[in-house]
Image (cartoon, rainbow over all chains, first blue to last red; front, top):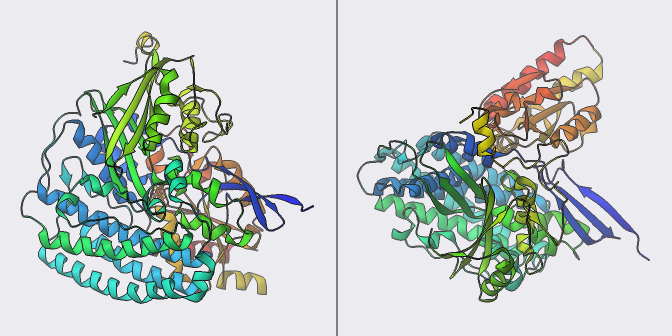
Length: 360
Length: 126
Length: 142
Ligand code: SF4
């Protein structure tokens, strides 16, 4: 009889920089059971959102997750604005979309690097991160910071993109596209990568829907769902259709993200070329009225839901944050059992887990 | 928010199953503290994720409520979370973390509940 | 001032631990290792095992569950060791100061040698912080 061993994966583990623990039970080299233990990142942000004034929530919610921080700030302002509802100038909407896609570009580059690292391609990891620095540079130049931009406020944005910046952004994006093209080609066509990822961690369409997966994880299983289809911000005026792969394995999820990287660049180019003139913010007085609403945006990892409830004062009654990884985490329950010990990191990374999001 | 369907707590499993069978996807659940009662809202999305439907019920703070985890595992984490943070008494959870999904042993219990209005007034906090 | 002491200053091994940060500082710590900042040219190597590490880079505020883990890791790092709190929230609790599950800065649990403010910190600041820590290590009478 095979021996059973239970190994804790985390909370401090070289594969995942974040604190999460997976109690994995192996039978020889095969995973038979997995129990995710979270709570290492629990801070209590939802409660603090009720204690803070509504306009300070932006800075707090941005720090739910540092990688998709832009989408968090966008969602929290969208949710708060919808409580009135406020009429946001079109230029603001376009600017928000441009930065959102810029953040997606950097996040996907980051993920592609980490994923390459998960199966041992260390120099590829470094190459992707080298390209990513260029995206961070234009983010810093236009939005003000590399990681946490704090560019959104309720009623608008704090910075504008002028002509000179527009040119730099376009030039940089062209370079990013060219350079990532080379690397992504290797990743997608390489024999070794295929043998590590094709057929590994298969999740069928039905399973993905039943587990409530979101984002690239869901689209990798052949479901064409995306919060951008709800046409928030400027997505209604852009040419957008979700990217879908049908195989449902790690390779498919990687391909979705790789293709979304180029799509994000295209969307930025399109939004920049259509950028309307006008105001970038409107004045907001008083607190949000007693009302409730849901804001949904597409973060790099999937759909982000913010539920907000106002009560007429400057403090919100309730703020609920449902992050993409919170929805994707149950997927480890079906991805891991049955896979080999060596495939665990690849499987986990293919979900693009963001633990600090999950626990808030 | 449109599409809010008011139900009772015992209908949640049936109504939820109906939506899921019709091709909807579970999104999340939100618990609200209404001073005397708890208001629970389940969100489902359909039509490529564009349309939202909400099932909402209100229960007293010490009433037991059924869990959807018998039907779909996707509600596992959020029901555990509501149980922990709001003290919502969810029964028959598929995996019960026993109040320690998020919170550590020395964390405050049910931190998301608001101070009772009556008590807060008597202390002069409002 | 033996050989080991000298090599520790010349090539410190770093371990990074994430308490309950927002990842903002974590990705900047990782960015330090990548080609643009490339701390490996200073001999700094990132380690996964606390028993190999000289310098502990800690991001994020301590929450009630990670406090024990952090203490544990700190005890496993062989001395002399340096602890660096990376980011405002690791230094003081920062933006999370009023969250119910947060105890505060890293110094609530383990002694800290260098504080690096910034939210998120820039990679340059992290490198500066590590250099400061190494100076402290070099001047320590060991
Ligand atoms: S200092 Fe700021 S950016 Fe860094 S981990 Fe803390 S909240 Fe995130």
